[in-house]
Length: 463
Image (cartoon, rainbow, N blue to C red; front, side):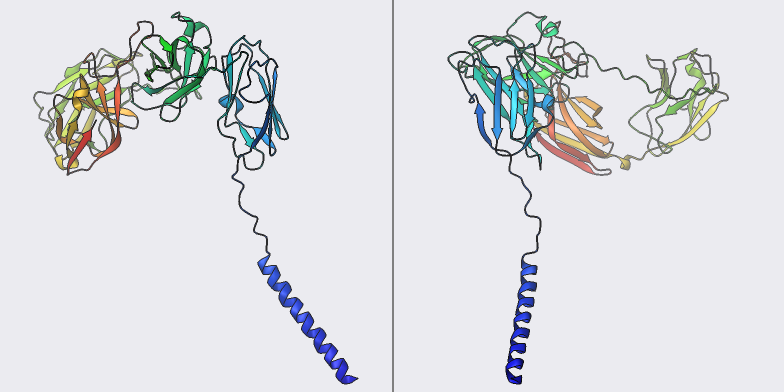
């Protein structure tokens, strides 16, 4: 009896040990890790009426997906063609998206409704990509296409926020007064493509439509126009458009708490860290316009206060900047003497006392030499090389040969552009739709140029 109990006890103990080991092992193997992230977009199961329906007569379109969906950034993605007077209502519920048409449909017309990437699943916001629903109120779907590219004339770069418009009304004022019949977006490269177009003649424009009115109503808007109307047919070729802003946007100065202004004439200078650039004039910039300016009361001297000959002191056309031109010597110490009554501003404020500026010029070794060899430069009529830093033109040089060089150039990283300077005034000129004048074109060189100090920098550029 004791032996039998002992065997039963050992058997039960062994069985419990087996369960504990198996249970522990199963727990380690079966630990939940959360599973892979859902990256699959919703799948369209059905559209009612079906996509590409002809003889369309209803006013409701229902799209059914395989999972719960939502609409995100609908207004940024929604495009309809032809453009309706009353926009449709687009809504979602559970697994369906419903489009309710609220405008009277034209007879024998192909319509397209682009929702872009606005249809997304609920959990991970995976978009149903580039969705377009097409139908026709007639017997067939129009199939003609028209493509092209838009770049910014001033920079040679693309702007993906631009829209391209097609007008059947060929009057010059249509773009000011009415919405286009067809609208398409450009991509990150500036490319656009219209589909399902009807044959006919159209005017083509591009616009940065910040107001949402789909009309050109502000000269500060980015805008482009084709030189002539285009005829949409099977033989239509891509078009190139150049966008420009006819006027620079006005930036309203920031307003804060009013403070009592000190009655002292204040200015800033081009001297940085006590040193003056060898390649530029010394400048004094004032916040208010100057009057009663006397250039003889500003003198450039050496450290012994001996006047430097051949110095030219002048004031610019804004009367806010005094320019001191001199043939600077490297690593040389100078003094600039400014008498207190050299000028007053328009409020009658002058310096409280005479100023003396002490500074030293840079060394030639602080600069790098640069040589650029261009290929295919003859594609431009009047090429001007532009150096860009912080999106501003820092320097520009007309190119008269395929090789350009400069002994001294400020070190740094620059973007390069080639301006085709049609009127040869050295700067980029905007266009005018009213005068039917296209803007001057700029070619952007993709690779940036890094110039090192005290270094011979050379680059070959194929245009």
